Amino acid sequence: MNSPELDCFDLTRWPEATEDHVALRDALRRFVSTEIVPFATEWDEAGTFPRELYRKAGEVGLLGLGYPEAYGGTPCDHLSKAIATLELTRAGAGGINASLNSYSIMIWPLLIAAPQPLRDEIVPRLLTGERIGALGVTEPDGGSDVAQLKTRAVRTDGGWRLNGSKIYITSGMRADHYLIAARTGGQGAGGISLFLVDRDAEGFGRTALKKMGWWASDTASLHFDDVFVPEGRMIGEENRGFRLVMHNFNSERLGMAAGALGYAIACVEDALAWSHERVTFGARLIEHQVIRHKIVKMIDAILPPLNMLVTLGRRVDAGQSPAGEIALLKSHAARVMRDCSDSAVQILGGAGFVRGTRAERIYREAKVMMIGGGSEEIMHDLAARQLGLV
Image 1 (tube, one colour):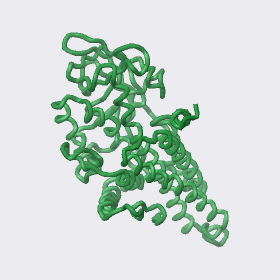
Image 2 (cartoon, rainbow, N blue to C red):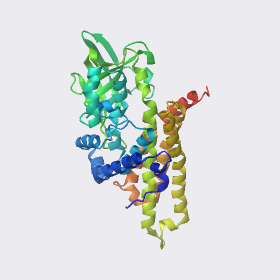
Image 3 (cartoon, helix red, strand yellow):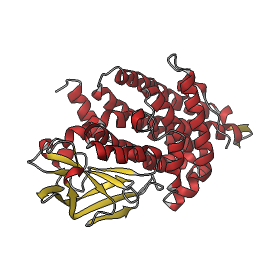
Image 4 (cartoon, one colour):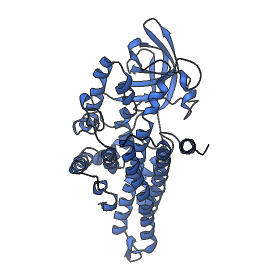
């Protein structure tokens, strides 16, 4: 299908957009069109994609977007980040995007609190795609309740001994460096520290997980059996790691909201393209009022949270931390993705049910967006507290 692009979704038309935003959009569109779109179905079926894609993403500047120049990054505003995310979603391949960006949820603690030699060694390599990073926080018994994690690090000569497990870790099989949250003190958030563990550490094991969606993303459970972590590999202060993890949540959730809306837009484009091509009862689908209205309802669902995304990004750029509103946006955007993927598959009919279309992949991947980065229930509870309801 030759999917049309709708101007109403083009963030480069916003008043604050510059020629740099347009250039970013165009560069990433070329990258996605040549390096991801032709292979998305093949990689999804294979359950993986070439490691070389990380290097290519680094060369085009994608991995360095929003990070300090001193480490090879390109500082930018949140409008740039939203534009980049929407371009990545054009492939309709959430697993590829999730794995390419797994470093982004572990890199800020390194930038903020890692010893300088460690920072200089690892951060530039993450931004060029030479190395792959993953964050290990979620545990089998804990889920979204991060403060209750049980993986424990105990002091020993020259460092720490790490024991426990993590689950649902994006890039869990292929990462080179893992930022691991472990309990070093008492119960609750105040007893958590962060450690950087390399993939070849003795006693460190990984088990691949099969999933409903994101097939091309290697997701794994991690196992730590008396893994030795040298003293210089603690990131930040002892028992103060939870705050470092929390620091990145607003950006992560804004990114997930942008991704969910991007996938919803892809569903609109595919539904619209199919409705212009498919003829039923002597007329194209688009000529049937019920189909036109279904597509318009999809657009109507996307535009308000898309505008909210840009507005909240502007507030974050201004130094604000609207955590409650961001939580609501993330939850809302995930529901929009779910509903639009459902409508797209319905309009495509059998063509949407057969594997290999964007809408089919996105339909399978909608649920993870309602769970990852904080479940819908956790987002609503966070919003209630942040907005002063309790």
